[in-house]
Amino acid sequence: MTLKKLPESFGDLQWLRRLKLYGCHLSELPESIGSLILLEELELGSNNLKSLPESIGNLFTLKNLSITKNKLKALPESIGSLKNLDYLDLYENALKSLPKSIGNLEKLFSLTIADNKITELPRSIGNLKLLWYFDLQQNKITHLPVSIGQLESLIELYAQRNKLKSIPNSIGNLKKLVWLYIYDNNIEELPDSIGELISLERFDASHNKLKSVPETILQLRNLEELSIYDNDFDDMPFIRKFLYKNN
Image 1 (cartoon, rainbow, N blue to C red):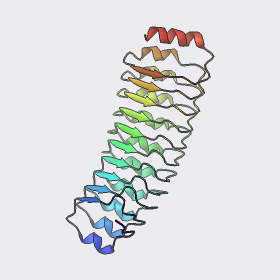
Image 2: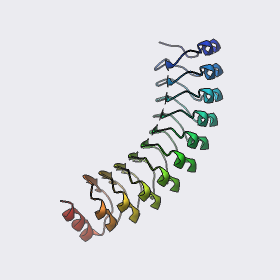
Image 3: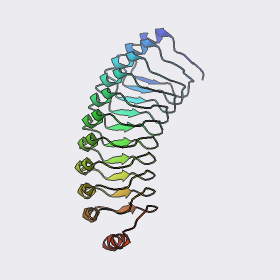
Image 4: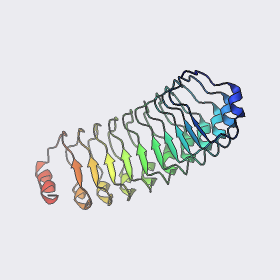
């Protein structure tokens, strides 16, 4: 099905609650999309969208927004007005950054920004207190903001295949974190606070530039799966000690 563009009159469908336009070759959305004030679910995957109209911020009842596999280069600041949004998937676009207003999405529990061109995250990301799933893999992010330690509900964090050089000490505040993936980065050192991730079960820090791992990692009593291969370890006696205690 090929639409390319929706008519402005589309906004007259004011009783619409679910709108699925997957793979319709849309290149733009009309401003009238903001008139669909009862909309709860909007699926726009596999189109050719390069931008979103500011009016999208008028969709106050929207809970689920999926815009995967498009060509988005930026998000409007009005995205932060979607106060009821709990699921946002922006996988495989051309985003270089996220607006500060992303931090206003206080009901968000799942955020996917994987496979974009993002270089840094706004500090406001720490305001997402209910977020438990965060996938930011395969971007160009060089560091995680200290505010990431404020994501107190976070259970799964996927930050692999970026350009991370370090991990903030605040990571230790994520007491509910179960899965942490940071492989294929440029990380040279892990903070001692990594040992405070008391719920951690899976940890992959392979393919980095680590020369050692902090001894506090021995405190991760719930750890079931550990991958730290293909690093630059020169502290092999400690590595052997660690492996022995976890077998």
